Length: 299
Length: 299
View 1 (cartoon, helix red, strand yellow):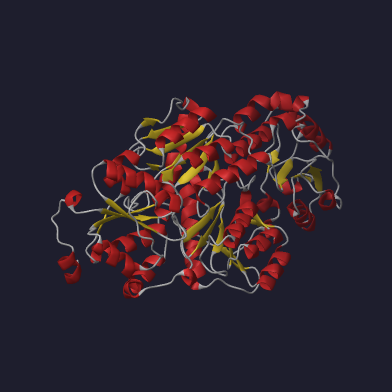
View 2 (cartoon, helix red, strand yellow; view 1 turned 135 degrees about the vertical axis):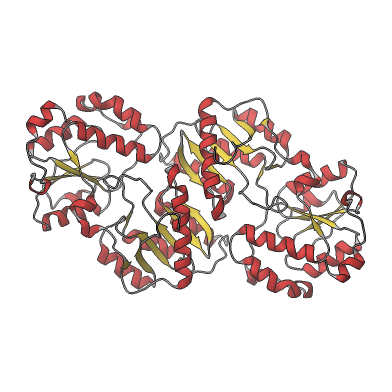
């Protein structure tokens, strides 16, 4: 913590009492879900939607200040004005091209650290960003800490449950994700009868599911419709404050179009935007959506 | 070996002297490359192109009999008539839908074993098929055994060589492929500055490269053009007689369209269709194409 930040950021360790929560918002509906959950828990929020990423309709119901990407100085100034000490990052992000960034002086100051963080995979980038905020006296929280209800818990969302075959495919997928994890690769795979149909990397989960649907339409996936699972897990060692995997209604739609039996996510480690709608669409499509606990490592 | 097969298939262990080599041909140019290499080594070949997969122009220069998929009885009869004891499978295959298959009685006889092999990943399917031929007295050879020149060796094809950054990406990709290998997943990944851009599964290498090109066109890949590598390796424990990874001129074209620096394959374990053309196109596109030796396991 710097001296300047220390002077500005008075407050004890009881962060729940530490003023409004700053919610830096990327794309999708999740920022609204998180903000509403925090408000429901009795804490004020101030949203900082990122221009080009955040959805104006999602942030409109809350107090908010639009910010541009890489205007770190402005964000810090606004958070201090609003008395925010804790912040969460939430919502979809697109890795930016350096040429798109319009820096402010606060950003230039931290640029060497950002540049270092920019090399390597997402985990590296995000933990670097977290450290920069912490150096300036802010406390980066996980959305799962400030709004635990948005995590998928153990068991099914909706009424459908996985079959024995589905359960075997889920276990296979969890094993593959664990094996890939040290390489900072994507967080999701599609498995059908222990055959790996797709592995997520830069295309994202929705892109991967669309590919499975397209391969099926081309006749290149031979397991019948209704067989196979989407499995999603956080990477081992992933900073849960920054980049938890997320599912939402569009994930269920993607699983349905891919012709799978359902989706499984690691309980307690995956965010769900609009759980009621996820359950409703899963039931309507005849799919299961379930939180599971992986076996302990090495088992 | 069955008694019937034993009676028909006389011949000592010197398979080079064991009559013409049967080449069961899938798609692409590789069957022609292999057949020509075997003929150049002084051994006769008889090709068995699979209807719907093999290219008539590729098989035309050689003695051949067209066969339908799953007409195992006909294939065995023809191979015996031609005095072939050794066979190789070579060329692109598409996992067939059961509804497309027109079985003959020879196939029906081995159907229970085929059905067992059909479950699980490709490795399982292919080793099951290999065992069936062996039970009938044939000897399944690897294309790399009968035509070693079609394997990519150590070092560059063409004049370009990988940079230090490319070499680091190749090492990262080889590590990821080794980690995934027990899950019988695809044989190729795209890595740029140690960030995994794509992992191959059911879409195949060409499909994966097209995805990287599309993601780049959409602005979703932020490493600049000319950075990043395709890395291709056999799966650990893969049956080299049946399913060695393959590159060819179209792989180089895909790498170029994906905006990568080049491609690396495990030396001695990857087939190359038309190595001269691969080298020519790589040079024309300013790409490297190189055979590498992975570090020993555990290092």
